[in-house]
Length: 487
Ligand code: AMP
Ligand code: MG
Image (cartoon, rainbow, N blue to C red; front, side, top):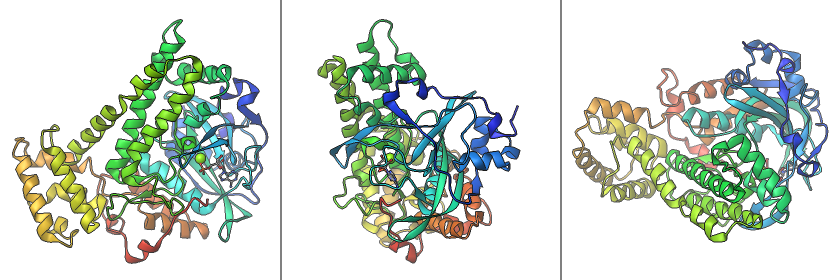
């Protein structure tokens, strides 16, 4: 049964049951003259809301931060973290408010506003988010979900009149995000000096999200099993990122979900032309979060998470043993993804070399990541569209011959292989220039581009007639687009 007003949802807030040290209860700061730019019917559906609920004043009031969610307890959570490899101490929801949680058939779903005003954790920040970054987060969450990659979701985006000062003056917006939880590695690191609170947080997370890890009367073993699962989920996540050419941009430990979800979309990028050390965030001068560094960064972040668990009297060696599964977990997930993307049936000896050559081929010519995979499906019968992606056609042809040879090891019928590859290699991804067009339109309060992109990205493997432009490599002007941490 779907509900026609967001205020009629049954809302609780289990996070608010934690001791007060974990958060601050406070009110949001409403946007000035809020307007709903877009609402996401599929996420609303997850919460049990009808499409009609999205048109109601109640919905706008809640998503703009003007009225609290009935039954919820608005709060901002504290956390800490390592930023760019350095301990940053206390951070926290500096511009986000958890409104409450809805119990759904898929489990609890929290509703959180981002850009909803200052909090005790704002430090020098203004508590706001700009339209640009809010549209980017809104689109990217749904693009990830469409790709089948674990992510927080986006329910709505509201724009206001409030000026926000970044490099230039911009307008404020709020994104209503939805996730089972927004707890981060940094939420654990925050209690690295306080075993009692760390234990409380760990119990909360295990009970709610990792109940299978609970070993009766053995908290140490429970913690180890929990860590093992976080290792597995984080490895799977980054393997998924790698194989769609996604760069997160700011993989600080405070942006790492304890549930293995993609979260805190900022200066992320889906690569156009492949560059192995591509850095999407212009603020990341050292390239710490380059594409090829992401898997080892996740490993590093897992070490930070594990190291705070040592205060619970868990042997460092036991923790290390769980962490040691990371590489195998990552490789299994990464290879599994590649097997599907290349239309194989299993990973075979020698595939490492062919895949290395593949990355080298793409990198040397900065060939389009997404189309390089997508068009490969038909490259044996109709090579031209695929070869067009490469400037050095001879090199591409040589690799294609090796790939064709590899296919002969498995007698998979061509039609079956092609269909499998098309369901593993998206045609549409959220390219920077597409997001940019949606942002320009959003500044005119035209959500048409958002609507179009959501339609394509929700089903990114299926070709939609009439949308050829959305499946093209980036145009020249897009190469000059820059994204930074400023949001
Ligand atoms: P991020 O790298 O965007 O995930 O943010 C790092 C920290 O800065 C978090 O604690 C954020 O809540 C905080 N923060 C970022 N932007 C703002 C802002 N405009 N106002 C207040 N806090 C912010
Ligand atoms: Mg963050």
